[in-house]
Length: 336
Image 1: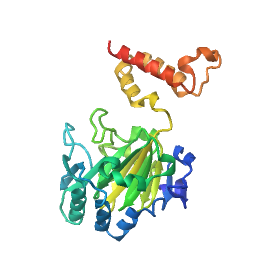
Image 2: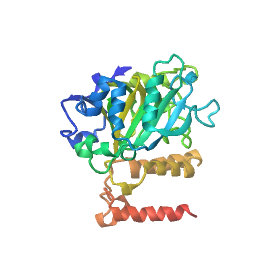
Image 3: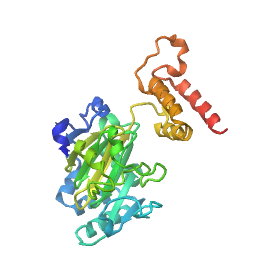
Image 4: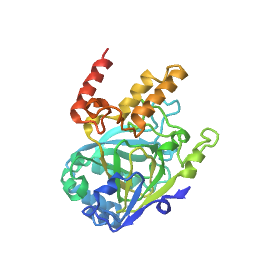
């Protein structure tokens, strides 16, 4: 495996107030060393886990968070149960600060459950902290979340949105795979996934060359990023990433944002519709539809042979009125 820091850009010296907006649209991951190192939470966590919890306590107003408890025999890996009818963890609602204390209390026990708080809105959980953790280009139109846990491993998955991930306490290891590695990642069901996004059925923590032989080919191309407290990672849309918590209390703040208008809709819906209407066609028909998708969707064709006023659906970029009309037509057709 290649070390990500040696393979693509690492930038030092940038802060949330000086981050150029153009970096956020990068097509490859970028490491930002010390990006949020001046945040009070980061400084508190460098003193101790309990100091970080004490700092967060002043912002907490009692919001209950969804907590995953992973049995000790799963070694902190989020996954499925043995027959993939459910998952290998139990969910419950609990007070945020109490969960953080429990994570720290069980961190060094030789046999203990692993506790994990998945994507949680900071605006709901710690509302008065939001303004203290702003990033200049992302003050509007992004989702701002926190993730916390002990030594938890989340298998490779992708985000549809662009992602700015900031390590605020503990240490996080990202194992990154380019989108084309999907065939080597052994992705689980599309319609049943722990966090909503499909995940790999294997990780670097439980390698099995017999059951998942192509995973080693993905690892040959993988980039490894270790984020220290204060570091951040710009993660492009659709890059697969496995995330491991390496400290006793690992808290990550992340910002999800899109560089296209919301009225374009979710690409995942188009994928699901294609699975419904195309995947079970005869091979020669699927091949023909593949050519149409390549021509109309994935190419850089500008369709200049059609007068501009007549391009309508083919105009690039599509305007909001056309997008909304198309969405309404699709909704009506799908009801039939």
